[in-house]
Image (cartoon, rainbow, N blue to C red):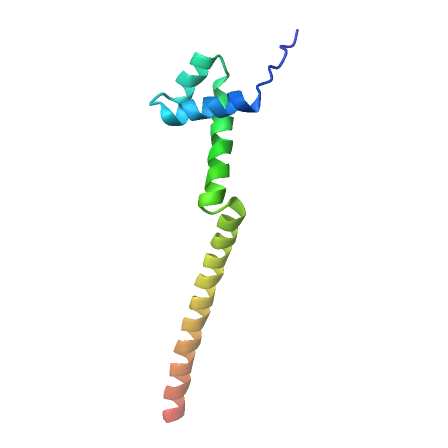
Amino acid sequence: MPEKRRKFDAEFREGAVRLVHESNKSIAQVARDLGVNEGTLGNWVARDREQREGVNGLSKDDLDELKRLRSENAELRMERDVLKRSVVLWVKEAMR
């Protein structure tokens, strides 16, 4: 017989996440104390962290774009360096 899923309201979830952040207890310990599955509480904490970092730091989309731009920048620098070297060689050949 399947287990019936428990529903937790937003206030309970926020309080549980606050307990993890404010106490020196692990997610597992807080989950045991509250009678909540450890994975469930871990998901709540991760979701809270993503929301806070999205406001204070870079979002996942921003991080992906930053990675892409850094890669593109490295490629363009390499192309520039190759062009510089080829111009130097071309000038040396022209001076002969």
